[in-house]
Image 1 (cartoon, rainbow, N blue to C red):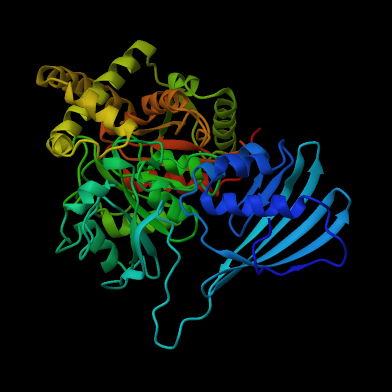
Image 2: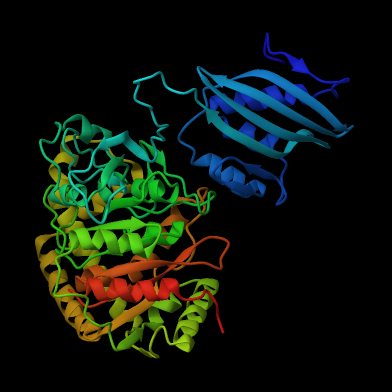
Length: 534
């Protein structure tokens, strides 16, 4: 079933069925028929698919990547070059066109008992013709990453430590001239353009940064998965078959893709640190309240904190220099390091071993002083976590409940269920939970006095994009039991990449409130240390 008018060039006869299979694949691609696409790729761990950004190995990884793809190709095949390598192996190169854009798709087809299947594929991303003189070039925009982007969207307002740095701003943070959408199209539709940017955005621009664009968020930031039922699932370049984490999903993906150097986001329960861990980035959550939250759409103000994602600690420190108040220079680092065995036991065995080995290597090299253990029982952590979630839910409903009731059906099922549960929290339950959180905060701050707490950022790699709701909810629960400690304490935390898995995880440092700069200094020392284990 070849497309009419598409020239097919082959030095000899083309084996029966292979072109029919190719055109079935092409039709399924343009229709986003994932079942047909999955069936036409060779099953097993040896199938490969690559493009200019990622290399996927194995049918499962390819299917997972495809399930989260938000941008569906609109190009058409303009020409085919076919080469028969063997009776059961055919190479097909397709020249594609989409307006002025041209691309190349290369596939190795193999004949199996079930017919022709793709064993290897590579896609060259479209090359667009140069803009006319005086025209403003347009950047390709993935709607799962960006709500709006520009070149730049807003220019710098001065010069400083962030000269030349592009910033992706989470769609909770006010950007002048644009409405704030909160990851919810129905909410966005009712908003007007903001007359002024949030102070944190203005501070970055005064330090030399420009805004690359407004990046997507999970709906109202009430998720750590990195998916949005309206805009799609943002990519995870470090592990394309896996979720990228959220709720600062767009800023994280923009930084990981190299489309921005800084992702400005928020972290209520882990929304910066979790995507940082899942994508091999540096994620910094400052002391609660250290960065002004004016002009930021809230979720749970007791915990909401403006923070940022970068690809290295040096860039994170440059952002801190622009946003955090100077405290008479950088004080010396903490004399003590604490570990929390309970948090480590929540991690999967490989993550636990990887974390323990890295900490042991740091101690052996003198990069970290010898650690001691902080005693915390599972029952106490469960009590703290339940109280944290109760306060978060109560405040989330107080923030968004009226709008949600007035706009039924505007949220995806997972976030809607979370808000429905939040609506049931009573004032008395919230007051009791606040008392528990206050006691937990006192204990955590006592531990952190003159010390840093070192623990895994997440229990393991991100769930696969094909994971079901039950698996994602289980990962969410184990992750939040670890990530809630920093917001309970109101303390700064930084997640550093921890590699050694087939996908990234993270090593997290938590410092006492107000020790943001020495915490960054400690992180810089660890990041510069050799990646080895004893």
